[in-house]
Amino acid sequence: MTDITILFEDGEALVIDKPAGLPIERPRAGGRSLEDHLDDLKLGFQRVPVPVHRIDTDTSGCLLLARNPKALKRFNAAFEAREVDKVYLGVVAGTLDQDEGTIELSLAKISSAEKGWRMIPAKKGKPAVTHWRMLAVHDGRTLVEFRPETGRTHQIRVHALAGLGHALLGDPVYGDGRGAPRTMLHALALTVHREGKPPIEARAPMPADFAALGFSDHASGG
Image 1 (cartoon, helix red, strand yellow):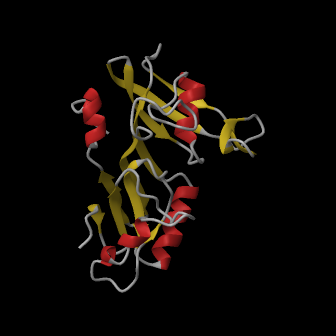
Image 2 (cartoon, one colour):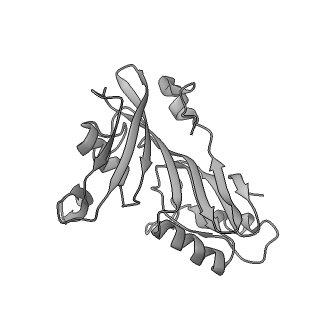
Image 3 (tube, rainbow, N blue to C red):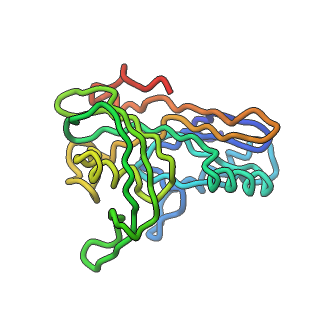
């Protein structure tokens, strides 16, 4: 059996609690990835489940897997139609002036030989919208609930820096990489609406490294 926690299971879907540091796809340099666990995650089904969306290697929490091609097609359509509710927790390296708000900053990808690629706010980029609210402050750091409407690459990481004025703690690309051993972002909850069926609903417990920063009792109620 796999050591990955299953948060939701039915005939067409699995939601797992992806550990921080585990990439979804095999790195070019080799090493472990989610692919190593997919056979175990068949759980008696013939087909290997397929990730429907992507979360960064450093990000922990809810990841949806489809158990057959028809389900994969429907779930992809649900993500495209924004029929998926996502809640993330992030720790930013500073304090905020407001309690809540909405960040609307379009994003574009840039690349350079020195720094590699990254996302930046750009008027001609793809629209990106993130709702946020402050949950707790501890030792000059802030626990923030993020509810992204769109699903752009690195959306929350860029919006934290450009919209809130503080990068996520530990982020080596958009911050200074200090204060935590990884980018402090956790996919707390996922809801996928389905026609004629109950929604897929999953919630991933707050990870130990968030608790170690003093935020164990401050998870959002959803």
